[in-house]
Image 1: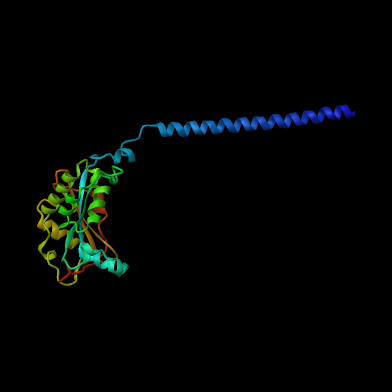
Image 2: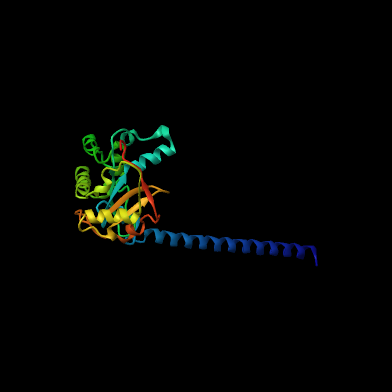
Length: 251
């Protein structure tokens, strides 16, 4: 083969390689563009019912959970974690028993949270008015930010509902003045609340616990604060055979 022919063949091979590379690049570009279009269409697709956007819309919920915390358990656990950082508002000398942890809007499955960020300002007068049943300003502020903003109510009406829910829930007599460590089963606690509160069913209440102590009693209520069943909450009840309830301080 002549030198000129070899040069032409070299140029042809180079041109072929460049063309192949260009074609490969075009294919990759088209593929990436197509994937981006699919992603964009997915992002623009209307959110289905129950999506995070709709679920966190203030006032869009199905029922409330009234969470009643056994204060002696909370304080004992706090002392075990760090004796220097025990919450003094709740864990000092005053003999708290069941206190309100919160009134939480719920969906039939899951729950909304932090529905307005930043949350509307909470006046100090409202905070102070709740300290007899929610014994910590920090707790009151936190519950308004996380859960109250999802109620669709203003702060005054929301905390009026918190108080109303607590006042119409009767604490069983055996848990009103616990003077020594009490050993119970979750079923015994539930049954005691059911007996003390006509209309409350086994499917409307759940007991929560830590490794050995009773933590909370959670009661489901309609938006107008009547007892109602709540299967998902009920399924989360504590499964331990025995629990302890530390005594009320001063007991």
